[in-house]
Length: 362
Ligand code: IPM
Ligand code: MG
Image (cartoon, rainbow, N blue to C red; front, side, top):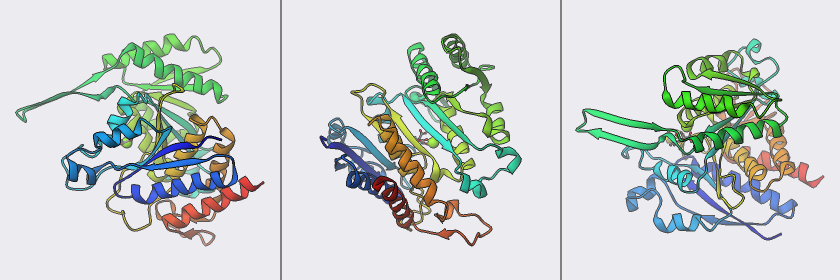
């Protein structure tokens, strides 16, 4: 097999701890399968901004254009002007046309103990995918401030932008044998949401086997904690997706469980995979961050770039098996359960590797 080139952007804070664990997963796979990877380390984020005045240099950005795919940790250090470190990730999403942000949310059976909801709200379990529009909405950053007295952010939706994300979501639901798709908007107020909802209803007619429902964002946030078991594919615009994905990740343990794929569905496109959590400066450098979101982002890489659900499933099972006994502090139950061991970032990654080896050796 020709080697696959992967850019690794550790970034700042806990990004430096979790990306090596994602790499460990990739190395384990190349050890037991025909996959070969070439890794290219790229710097970006707050520390780079301090040195160069840019969160990613032009030279680094050019290098990203040469790789097959990207794994990113997190960007941001305390004390910088707002947004300068994060700019790199937004630029990558925009310029590589990664218009889909895929965020699966799954509660492992053995982790019901860490779900903040009572059993009656968990019922059959939590297993949904949030599909967030990743290229427009309020993230186009059109606006500005007038003498610190008035500030404007414009929310931009285009028909093409809305249609392509909705089609991706409908097709995703069908491909994954789902019966229902939920669209989240604010159509009782926003023009952009009214357009979104009418396209959802119109395009939805082509998918007769799917039940379609729309919620206003406020109501959805409420149902997300009352009956999360009810959702399968959830599709929404950029900022709503940002917000609900943090809430949803917390339902399945912590932000440290939230994986994501910034996907350009064009086969020639370059996609980027990253945990949804930030650089977490409060716990950075202590080897206690949760590497699972990053490892599960690698799973998404196999499913969506290498088109290999078999390896994707193996990574998922390895994580599921590893958390039966080992947990980083963020997913460790308050009432200690003697069967569980509290472990470091590296140990957690190591246990996942051991479980993955068992599956791949078979
Ligand atoms: C995320 C993050 C980013 C976003 C930030 C870092 C710009 O919160 O990936 O969810 O808002 O998209
Ligand atoms: Mg976010």
